Image (cartoon, rainbow, N blue to C red; front, side, top):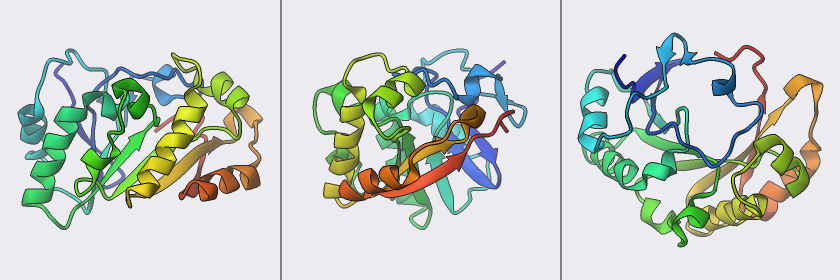
Length: 204
């Protein structure tokens, strides 16, 4: 099995940079299956560079949007992500770039990395996941304490940098429901829109 660094889903191109994550969300697709539409996203090795990603990108007919999202947290590979994003923006300026992230990057790198993404990324989707820290910890099972507060700060940092940001929650997990109005308020208060994603019981 070779590394699937680039895959297609519902007409969009996705980039799978890592299987590592600082969350272990109980509703995460990878807990239930090893593939997305038959494409194995568990990497054999994480020893690769931007040129390997770009090479795989070249095998696809690129769509109007490319999303950094796979079986891990893409911003854990920040340098590779930035290099690939620069390549896309230089060669395909009309293609929109989105990052789906758990919002832990500033905590991980101990600095505000958001300015480094300005001009490279059109939209950042941050997994808010809950309306309070207690629920966040239960659902997301983060590897460090205070993670929910870090997510809120990251959302605000994206907004302050002028990057469009969406806060997302997964609704309907095993019959559970969020306070959507409160989640919308939290998102709005920090400069973001809210996206409600319906839980997919059997994944893609």
